[in-house]
Image (cartoon, rainbow, N blue to C red; front, top):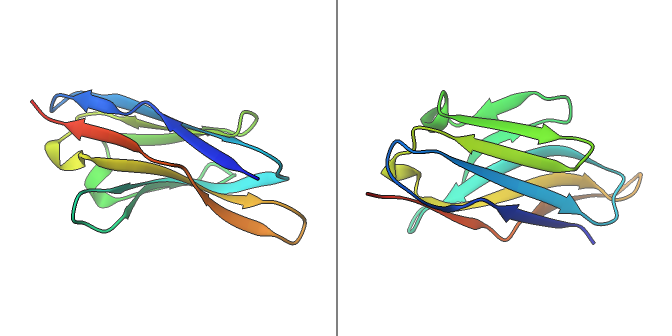
Length: 120
């Protein structure tokens, strides 16, 4: 069984920074795309940023230029550096990963989420 565990959320003032981390553990062959999503109260979950196993990245328009996604293949981790945070970035942030379990089986895994609150 594969687990994703996020860390690094918290309360920050507008304009501040936070760094989220997500570590994958368990039995797997490898991890393909990893991503960060977020869900604000009363809103649908949305993709924030993703990174492929080759390092290609994709960002939501609302976070381009402020957030940076990175990963460590060897450690099975993905990070999200969030700068110039705004109150509208307040949400629960979730890590996700496409995990290859066997040569023929892939699973889409989610972390439990970490709260990010941007407020003065």
